[in-house]
Image (cartoon, rainbow over all chains, first blue to last red; front, side):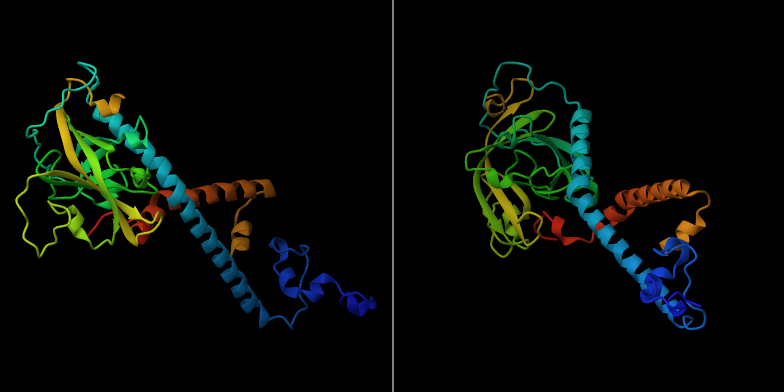
Length: 277
Length: 52
C-alpha cells in the first residue's frame, strides 16, 4: 500500500522520481525507500547502468580537468625547481672573479666536443632580456622526456657546439615544464644571448626572429636557410638558433630566433658586459 | 559505482569520508606522477623542435 493509494492527493517524491530514490542508503531518498515490488525488476539493471556510466563520465571529466591543471601548472612548478637545482648542482664556481668585465676576444674561440650521450649537461644560457637572473641549463639532445621536460634547453644532435663555425641550435619549451623560452617573442635584434661552458663565455647577438613550420629544418642548418637540396657554402660564421613552439600552447608553427657570435671570453677573467650592466 | 564503494568501506560516516579523501588523494597522486607524464608524450601541443 503506497502513500497515494491511501487517499492522499499529493504523491510522494519517490513515487514521481523512482530512479532517484531506488539506491537506498547512498541515494538521495530515505534509507528505507523502496520501489514497489514486481514492477521494477526490468528497470533496475538499466538504471544502474545509466548511473554507473554517468559516474564514469563525470570522473573522466574531472580527470581531464586535472590533466590541464597538471600540464599548465604542475609541470611548471616541477620544471622550474628542477632547472634551478641543476644550475646549483653544476657548481661551476663564481664566474664574476677577475676584472669587472671580460676582455672581448674576436679570434676563433675554443670549442668543446659534442657530448656523445643525450642528457649530458654541458652549458648554461643567460638571456638578459628574460631577466637579470635568467640562467638555464643546456643539455645534449632534444628528446622530450630526458632533456626538454626535465632539464630545460636541449641542443640539436649534430649541430655546431657553442662558438663553432656553423649553427649552435637549441630548443626549449615556451609553455609548461619550467618554460625556459617563455618570452622568446620579446627578443629583439641586438639582444645578447650568452652561452657559458665550463671554460668559456660565448656572447651571441640576435639578428633575426621569425615564425616557420615544424618541417622547415633549414633553420638549424649550418648556415640558416640553406635547404638540404642546396649546396652548403663554406662555413665562415658562428650562428646560434633558438627554437620553440608557436603560437603558445600549440604546435602548429615554430618560433625561431637566429643570432651570430659577437665575441668570446675565458671564464675567470670577468663576466661579459651584457651580464653586468 | 561509488555507492558500492561507500558501502564497502566499514565504519561510521566520518570515517568513510576520511577514507574517501585518502583514496581521492592517492588517485590524484598516481595521475600526477604516472598517468599524466605518460599521457603527455602523446599530446602534440608541447613540440618545440623543428624536424623529426
